[in-house]
Amino acid sequence: VTLHPDAELSRDALLARVAALAGNSSHPIAKGVLASLTPGSFGELHTSDFRTYPGLGIAGRINGDGNGMLYLGSPGFMEREHQQTDAYFETLLEKANARGETTVLAAQNARVVAALTFKESFRPEAVSVLLQLQKLGLDVAILTGDSKPLSEVARKRLKGIAYYNGLLPEHKVGRIVAAGELGHLTAMVGDGINDAPALAAAHVGIAVATGTDLAREAASVNIVGHDLQQLPWLICYARRVVRKIRQNLFWAFFYNVVAIGFAVTGLLNPLVAALAMILSSLFVVSNSRRLGKP
Image (cartoon, rainbow, N blue to C red; front, side, top):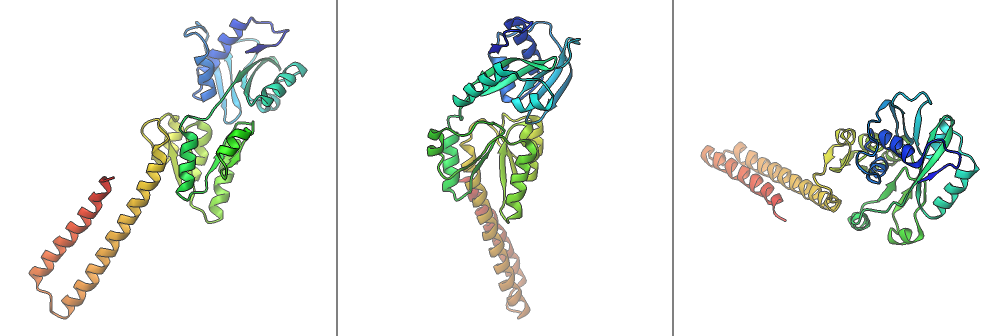
Protein backbone atom coordinates (compact mmCIF):
# COMPACT_ATOMS: atom_id res chain seq x y z
CA VAL A 1 0.00 0.00 0.00
CA THR A 2 1.41 3.38 -1.01
CA LEU A 3 0.06 6.65 0.32
CA HIS A 4 0.57 10.02 -1.30
CA PRO A 5 3.23 12.03 0.58
CA ASP A 6 0.66 14.78 1.14
CA ALA A 7 -2.15 12.46 2.29
CA GLU A 8 -4.16 13.94 5.14
CA LEU A 9 -5.03 10.56 6.68
CA SER A 10 -2.66 8.06 8.24
CA ARG A 11 -2.05 4.71 6.55
CA ASP A 12 -4.22 2.83 9.07
CA ALA A 13 -7.04 5.36 8.88
CA LEU A 14 -7.11 5.29 5.09
CA LEU A 15 -6.97 1.48 4.94
CA ALA A 16 -9.85 1.31 7.41
CA ARG A 17 -11.94 3.49 5.11
CA VAL A 18 -10.95 1.48 2.04
CA ALA A 19 -11.83 -1.76 3.87
CA ALA A 20 -15.22 -0.39 4.89
CA LEU A 21 -15.93 0.41 1.25
CA ALA A 22 -14.55 -2.88 -0.12
CA GLY A 23 -16.66 -4.84 2.35
CA ASN A 24 -19.72 -4.02 0.23
CA SER A 25 -18.29 -5.67 -2.88
CA SER A 26 -17.91 -9.33 -3.87
CA HIS A 27 -15.14 -8.65 -6.39
CA PRO A 28 -11.98 -10.78 -5.85
CA ILE A 29 -9.80 -7.68 -5.48
CA ALA A 30 -12.16 -6.26 -2.87
CA LYS A 31 -11.92 -9.57 -1.04
CA GLY A 32 -8.13 -9.32 -1.34
CA VAL A 33 -8.21 -5.90 0.32
CA LEU A 34 -10.22 -7.26 3.22
CA ALA A 35 -8.02 -10.34 3.54
CA SER A 36 -4.93 -8.15 3.90
CA LEU A 37 -6.38 -6.32 6.90
CA THR A 38 -6.87 -7.36 10.48
CA PRO A 39 -10.52 -8.42 11.06
CA GLY A 40 -12.48 -5.60 12.59
CA SER A 41 -9.78 -3.04 11.80
CA PHE A 42 -12.32 -0.66 10.32
CA GLY A 43 -14.33 -0.58 13.52
CA GLU A 44 -17.59 1.33 13.36
CA LEU A 45 -17.08 2.73 9.88
CA HIS A 46 -20.14 2.33 7.65
CA THR A 47 -20.74 2.96 3.98
CA SER A 48 -23.66 4.84 2.50
CA ASP A 49 -24.56 5.74 -1.09
CA PHE A 50 -22.58 2.70 -2.24
CA ARG A 51 -22.23 2.32 -6.02
CA THR A 52 -20.76 -0.38 -8.23
CA TYR A 53 -19.32 0.38 -11.66
CA PRO A 54 -18.89 -2.98 -13.44
CA GLY A 55 -15.39 -3.49 -14.74
CA LEU A 56 -14.16 -0.23 -13.23
CA GLY A 57 -14.54 0.09 -9.47
CA ILE A 58 -16.73 1.06 -6.55
CA ALA A 59 -17.59 4.25 -4.66
CA GLY A 60 -19.37 5.30 -1.49
CA ARG A 61 -19.47 7.65 1.47
CA ILE A 62 -17.86 6.54 4.72
CA ASN A 63 -19.92 7.51 7.78
CA GLY A 64 -21.65 10.23 5.76
CA ASP A 65 -18.27 11.75 4.98
CA GLY A 66 -18.49 15.45 4.21
CA ASN A 67 -15.31 15.14 2.13
CA GLY A 68 -17.24 13.52 -0.67
CA MET A 69 -17.26 10.09 -2.23
CA LEU A 70 -14.41 7.64 -1.74
CA TYR A 71 -13.49 5.93 -5.02
CA LEU A 72 -11.71 2.59 -5.33
CA GLY A 73 -10.85 1.12 -8.70
CA SER A 74 -8.73 1.10 -11.84
CA PRO A 75 -6.75 4.03 -13.28
CA GLY A 76 -9.38 4.25 -16.03
CA PHE A 77 -12.07 4.58 -13.36
CA MET A 78 -10.21 7.50 -11.78
CA GLU A 79 -9.97 9.25 -15.13
CA ARG A 80 -13.67 8.72 -15.82
CA GLU A 81 -14.65 10.14 -12.42
CA HIS A 82 -12.24 13.08 -12.80
CA GLN A 83 -10.03 12.02 -9.91
CA GLN A 84 -6.56 13.42 -10.63
CA THR A 85 -3.63 10.99 -10.77
CA ASP A 86 -0.45 13.03 -10.37
CA ALA A 87 3.11 12.23 -11.48
CA TYR A 88 3.85 10.43 -8.19
CA PHE A 89 1.25 7.74 -8.88
CA GLU A 90 1.85 7.71 -12.64
CA THR A 91 5.42 6.57 -11.92
CA LEU A 92 4.18 3.99 -9.44
CA LEU A 93 1.71 2.61 -12.01
CA GLU A 94 4.41 2.28 -14.66
CA LYS A 95 6.67 0.31 -12.28
CA ALA A 96 3.81 -1.93 -11.14
CA ASN A 97 2.78 -2.69 -14.74
CA ALA A 98 6.39 -3.53 -15.61
CA ARG A 99 6.38 -6.07 -12.76
CA GLY A 100 3.07 -7.54 -13.98
CA GLU A 101 1.19 -6.34 -10.89
CA THR A 102 -2.37 -5.04 -10.59
CA THR A 103 -2.82 -1.61 -9.04
CA VAL A 104 -6.04 -0.34 -7.49
CA LEU A 105 -6.27 3.36 -6.74
CA ALA A 106 -8.15 5.09 -3.93
CA ALA A 107 -9.29 8.68 -4.43
CA GLN A 108 -11.22 11.37 -2.64
CA ASN A 109 -11.69 15.09 -3.12
CA ALA A 110 -10.84 14.84 -6.84
CA ARG A 111 -7.36 13.36 -6.29
CA VAL A 112 -5.79 9.93 -5.89
CA VAL A 113 -4.53 9.51 -2.35
CA ALA A 114 -3.36 5.88 -2.26
CA ALA A 115 -2.45 2.89 -4.40
CA LEU A 116 -2.87 -0.76 -3.48
CA THR A 117 -0.74 -3.17 -5.48
CA PHE A 118 -1.56 -6.87 -5.91
CA LYS A 119 0.32 -9.77 -7.39
CA GLU A 120 -2.21 -11.96 -9.20
CA SER A 121 -1.72 -15.47 -10.49
CA PHE A 122 -3.72 -18.18 -12.24
CA ARG A 123 -5.54 -20.68 -10.09
CA PRO A 124 -3.36 -23.79 -9.69
CA GLU A 125 -5.56 -25.91 -11.99
CA ALA A 126 -6.43 -23.15 -14.50
CA VAL A 127 -3.67 -23.76 -17.07
CA SER A 128 -4.24 -27.52 -17.02
CA VAL A 129 -8.00 -27.04 -17.53
CA LEU A 130 -7.52 -24.63 -20.44
CA LEU A 131 -5.17 -27.05 -22.18
CA GLN A 132 -7.59 -29.94 -21.59
CA LEU A 133 -10.43 -27.94 -23.14
CA GLN A 134 -8.20 -27.17 -26.10
CA LYS A 135 -7.46 -30.90 -26.53
CA LEU A 136 -11.20 -31.54 -26.62
CA GLY A 137 -11.30 -29.54 -29.84
CA LEU A 138 -12.60 -26.28 -28.40
CA ASP A 139 -11.39 -22.84 -29.45
CA VAL A 140 -10.44 -21.41 -26.07
CA ALA A 141 -10.03 -17.72 -25.25
CA ILE A 142 -9.46 -15.78 -22.04
CA LEU A 143 -11.58 -12.63 -21.60
CA THR A 144 -10.47 -10.51 -18.66
CA GLY A 145 -10.84 -7.02 -17.33
CA ASP A 146 -7.20 -7.03 -16.17
CA SER A 147 -5.20 -4.40 -18.01
CA LYS A 148 -1.84 -6.16 -17.90
CA PRO A 149 -0.80 -8.49 -20.73
CA LEU A 150 0.26 -12.10 -20.26
CA SER A 151 3.84 -12.71 -19.23
CA GLU A 152 6.17 -14.44 -21.68
CA VAL A 153 6.14 -17.57 -19.50
CA ALA A 154 2.33 -17.67 -19.46
CA ARG A 155 2.19 -17.16 -23.24
CA LYS A 156 4.38 -20.20 -23.79
CA ARG A 157 2.26 -22.34 -21.45
CA LEU A 158 -0.98 -21.17 -23.09
CA LYS A 159 0.20 -21.41 -26.68
CA GLY A 160 -2.73 -21.32 -29.08
CA ILE A 161 -5.13 -19.81 -26.53
CA ALA A 162 -6.32 -16.28 -27.32
CA TYR A 163 -5.98 -13.68 -24.55
CA TYR A 164 -8.05 -10.47 -24.51
CA ASN A 165 -7.37 -8.10 -21.61
CA GLY A 166 -8.71 -4.76 -20.46
CA LEU A 167 -12.29 -5.71 -21.33
CA LEU A 168 -15.34 -4.08 -19.80
CA PRO A 169 -18.50 -6.23 -19.42
CA GLU A 170 -19.93 -4.91 -22.71
CA HIS A 171 -16.70 -5.79 -24.50
CA LYS A 172 -16.95 -9.39 -23.28
CA VAL A 173 -20.51 -9.53 -24.57
CA GLY A 174 -19.29 -8.16 -27.89
CA ARG A 175 -16.74 -10.96 -28.22
CA ILE A 176 -19.37 -13.59 -27.42
CA VAL A 177 -21.93 -12.16 -29.83
CA ALA A 178 -19.34 -11.82 -32.61
CA ALA A 179 -18.37 -15.49 -32.26
CA GLY A 180 -22.04 -16.48 -32.39
CA GLU A 181 -22.62 -14.44 -35.53
CA LEU A 182 -19.83 -16.41 -37.19
CA GLY A 183 -21.84 -19.57 -36.59
CA HIS A 184 -19.97 -20.81 -33.53
CA LEU A 185 -21.68 -22.27 -30.47
CA THR A 186 -20.37 -20.29 -27.52
CA ALA A 187 -19.84 -21.12 -23.86
CA MET A 188 -18.76 -18.61 -21.23
CA VAL A 189 -17.30 -19.52 -17.84
CA GLY A 190 -17.31 -16.84 -15.15
CA ASP A 191 -18.01 -16.03 -11.53
CA GLY A 192 -18.26 -12.27 -11.12
CA ILE A 193 -20.76 -9.48 -11.59
CA ASN A 194 -18.72 -8.32 -14.59
CA ASP A 195 -19.18 -11.74 -16.20
CA ALA A 196 -22.96 -11.88 -15.83
CA PRO A 197 -23.85 -10.12 -19.14
CA ALA A 198 -21.47 -12.39 -21.09
CA LEU A 199 -22.83 -15.47 -19.31
CA ALA A 200 -26.33 -14.48 -20.41
CA ALA A 201 -25.21 -13.70 -23.97
CA ALA A 202 -23.47 -17.05 -24.58
CA HIS A 203 -25.33 -20.13 -25.83
CA VAL A 204 -24.22 -21.80 -22.59
CA GLY A 205 -23.27 -19.79 -19.50
CA ILE A 206 -21.33 -21.69 -16.84
CA ALA A 207 -20.92 -20.23 -13.35
CA VAL A 208 -18.64 -21.69 -10.70
CA ALA A 209 -19.62 -22.14 -7.06
CA THR A 210 -17.57 -19.15 -5.91
CA GLY A 211 -19.53 -16.88 -8.24
CA THR A 212 -21.80 -14.01 -7.27
CA ASP A 213 -25.57 -14.46 -7.08
CA LEU A 214 -25.98 -12.43 -10.27
CA ALA A 215 -23.50 -14.64 -12.17
CA ARG A 216 -25.24 -17.83 -11.00
CA GLU A 217 -28.62 -16.40 -11.97
CA ALA A 218 -27.39 -15.42 -15.45
CA ALA A 219 -25.75 -18.79 -16.12
CA SER A 220 -27.55 -21.81 -17.55
CA VAL A 221 -25.20 -24.23 -15.75
CA ASN A 222 -23.86 -23.92 -12.21
CA ILE A 223 -20.85 -25.98 -11.17
CA VAL A 224 -20.98 -27.18 -7.57
CA GLY A 225 -17.56 -26.95 -5.94
CA HIS A 226 -14.47 -24.85 -6.54
CA ASP A 227 -12.42 -27.17 -8.77
CA LEU A 228 -12.20 -26.02 -12.39
CA GLN A 229 -11.27 -29.58 -13.37
CA GLN A 230 -15.01 -30.20 -13.52
CA LEU A 231 -15.17 -28.15 -16.75
CA PRO A 232 -13.52 -30.75 -19.05
CA TRP A 233 -15.62 -33.45 -17.37
CA LEU A 234 -18.77 -31.36 -17.99
CA ILE A 235 -17.97 -31.00 -21.71
CA CYS A 236 -17.25 -34.72 -22.08
CA TYR A 237 -20.40 -35.66 -20.18
CA ALA A 238 -22.53 -33.30 -22.27
CA ARG A 239 -21.19 -34.92 -25.43
CA ARG A 240 -22.05 -38.38 -24.05
CA VAL A 241 -25.58 -37.20 -23.28
CA VAL A 242 -26.00 -35.96 -26.87
CA ARG A 243 -24.76 -39.31 -28.22
CA LYS A 244 -27.25 -41.19 -26.04
CA ILE A 245 -30.09 -38.94 -27.19
CA ARG A 246 -29.22 -39.64 -30.80
CA GLN A 247 -28.96 -43.38 -30.17
CA ASN A 248 -32.34 -43.44 -28.45
CA LEU A 249 -33.98 -41.35 -31.18
CA PHE A 250 -32.54 -43.62 -33.87
CA TRP A 251 -33.78 -46.73 -32.06
CA ALA A 252 -37.25 -45.28 -31.51
CA PHE A 253 -37.50 -44.17 -35.15
CA PHE A 254 -36.22 -47.53 -36.46
CA TYR A 255 -38.55 -49.51 -34.18
CA ASN A 256 -41.64 -47.50 -35.17
CA VAL A 257 -40.92 -47.68 -38.91
CA VAL A 258 -40.48 -51.49 -38.78
CA ALA A 259 -43.40 -52.06 -36.41
CA ILE A 260 -45.78 -49.88 -38.45
CA GLY A 261 -44.79 -51.77 -41.59
CA PHE A 262 -45.60 -55.12 -39.98
CA ALA A 263 -48.83 -53.77 -38.49
CA VAL A 264 -50.05 -52.45 -41.85
CA THR A 265 -49.48 -55.83 -43.49
CA GLY A 266 -51.25 -57.61 -40.65
CA LEU A 267 -48.13 -59.59 -39.69
CA LEU A 268 -47.87 -58.11 -36.19
CA ASN A 269 -49.96 -59.67 -33.42
CA PRO A 270 -51.29 -57.03 -30.98
CA LEU A 271 -49.84 -58.95 -28.03
CA VAL A 272 -46.42 -59.10 -29.69
CA ALA A 273 -46.69 -55.39 -30.51
CA ALA A 274 -47.36 -54.55 -26.85
CA LEU A 275 -44.41 -56.70 -25.73
CA ALA A 276 -42.15 -55.10 -28.36
CA MET A 277 -43.17 -51.66 -27.13
CA ILE A 278 -42.18 -52.57 -23.59
CA LEU A 279 -38.84 -53.97 -24.76
CA SER A 280 -38.17 -50.82 -26.77
CA SER A 281 -38.80 -48.64 -23.72
CA LEU A 282 -36.55 -50.86 -21.60
CA PHE A 283 -33.78 -50.48 -24.18
CA VAL A 284 -34.05 -46.69 -24.12
CA VAL A 285 -34.05 -46.57 -20.30
CA SER A 286 -31.15 -49.01 -19.91
CA ASN A 287 -29.13 -47.21 -22.57
CA SER A 288 -29.69 -43.89 -20.77
CA ARG A 289 -28.71 -45.39 -17.42
CA ARG A 290 -25.29 -46.13 -18.82
CA LEU A 291 -24.58 -42.41 -18.59
CA GLY A 292 -24.01 -42.94 -14.88
CA LYS A 293 -21.04 -45.16 -15.60
CA PRO A 294 -17.60 -43.63 -16.14
